[in-house]
Image (cartoon, rainbow, N blue to C red; front, side):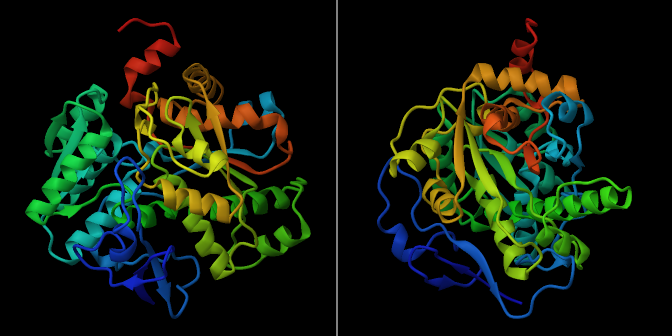
Length: 408
């Protein structure tokens, strides 16, 4: 396989090499207080990967020896019964090494750094990406420097320091932290892992789509062997019976701030379609908090408007979604949708999931489940629905305490 960066806006291509982040041409049109222009994606040509392997632009030998991905796809019995939705699934990325989905991107960025002998990585984060890169950096022998708002939950800042990374606390929002980290990266020449800005962050996050499709096929195959009617279409039956066996869900609900996880999920299903391992694209939902809903607003209006973010779900709180244009392009291309929920609905969903499944997720993850609950009446009760739970609840105990009426 031959890998390269491609610009979906103008079609230009670039080699995948240190120092390359955005499209030279499209990024020239960048304006203040708007999402990044010229975001690139990883593309490939040539022979397809071997059956069952996930195509990635860095060779396997460069990945650090830390178990990222292959996270469980829960079939929550009590939730299914309570909601009368027998094909509801929870994708549990809270059990990644640092406790969040962000490890998928950090893992690929670290592999890229090791391939090119890069010894330091810098990034901005609301907390999860920083603690993730610090974790993977510790396993890789790579120095990590992170810029994080002072308001980030203490648990995430503790993680960063425990892993041995350098923590720069910014007196401001994620957007200010992002600008300060870019300034350092440009002046020092160090590799930036900034979400969306570095195309590898989107590519790393596509891996969950392969796992979801594979695990869904296994679940359907197991049910069929037990004589259970799972409402598969004839086309899906043919897909599951093939090799490799993959099955696309009908809906995927994704917690969305910058939109990079959502873009990665769509990217993964695009690859699965190209490979012929699934036969259709699921409907991907951008679940956003009312106080940070720029992508949902742009999907409705066609344009981005910068507004200060205010939400209990700190991991998806952004004033300007850096990956906004790219995410909007992917949503529109594949018929994706958006749903906006209140902080009250987020906290209610957090407790509801924990008490009926045993899975404790932080508010940003609960946003995805709250979004699912908000549109549940619009969905086919037999549809295959996957809710992405991307961060462990222990990362933000202060918010969780509010949900259960406990003072901290």
